[in-house]
Amino acid sequence: MLLLVTAVAIGMGWLSGGYLKGVGAPASVPVAPENEGKVPKPADVEPGTGPSLVALAPITTNIASPAETWIRMEVSVVYDAPQPPAMSDAIHQDLLAFVRTLKMHQIEGASGYQHLKADIEERASIRSQGHAKQVLIRTLLLE
Image (cartoon, rainbow, N blue to C red; front, side, top):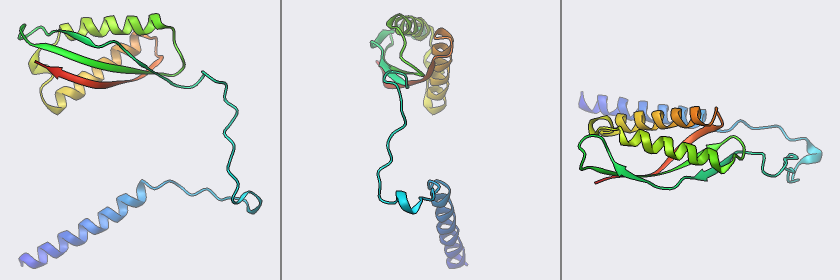
């Protein structure tokens, strides 16, 4: 009975792995015979109009509870287009004020990290009038 259950588990794992591997594969695009072997040229894009990544200054402060706990967070913001430095400074100050209100139990574990990231992304989006598309947390240290 144990061998049968093991064989079924191996078979299901192999089948689901093959299925998932096929789901994530990129769709093939048919190529015309006259274009075969040629390198496609990138679309005409004006420089400086695409998404941009801006690293904010590190945030180092104490959290609300326990007050003796310090946090250091380094973040980068992905904008839909280049933005003025004043917008990044405003986002930085807003995130600093937000981090000072955190309590340790709010950021414990994987779900706490996900909630923190969601809250930070929402605040950055509001502060930038929707231009901040994503916030990347590069470093998060608590001492």
